[in-house]
Length: 216
Ligand code: BG6
Ligand code: MG
Image (cartoon, rainbow, N blue to C red; front, side):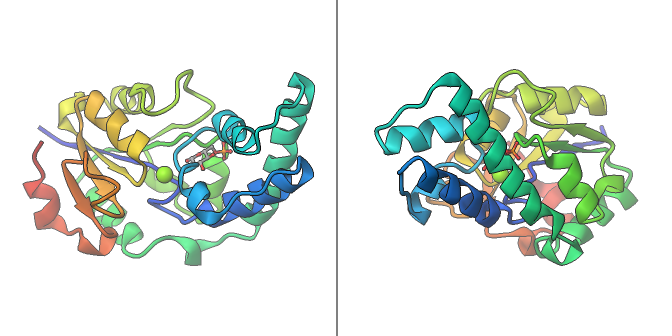
């Protein structure tokens, strides 16, 4: 059996949360809502639509459907400006090395992300060529914690879900991997990601032996 590996993007490969935060914050200001970094944590892994719904709810405010659409568009425009400045230096520690290790062993590799900007980001940081399959916010109909994104990734790789390992930094993503029957590796704090099969602080804790020993 050849295991497949599925990577979330934001918070696993690159730290884009800071850019999402800045872009959401300037949008929130426009509608008279303020939110802090702790609240921003709750937006990790959450789709663009759901993020705006949450922000409006925090401010106890509503907008028309048209305004909702234009707010999402203007948030994304600002976010894209930040992304345009990204380069390889923003790849999180040891991620490139682990991707290279998996490739050298012949493992198929997929991206499983909620972001509609996933491909642009992978291009910016020069990692697109490492992925055999991309499943992102443009190719799914249901958001994490629904397992759709990871099941599609496994299918694309031609690997059974229980032979797949998922790297995730969000609670919803870990739940999606578990529901999909995959091995979930939480990247971040064990307090937050307690449902994961195993939690690492970051990719510097990963090596060949660690990956081979992974079990559900
Ligand atoms: C997730 C991020 O990966 O993608 C969320 O963690 C983000 O913060 C979501 O809202 C959707 O991203 P995008 O790029 O389509 O707005
Ligand atoms: Mg993430």
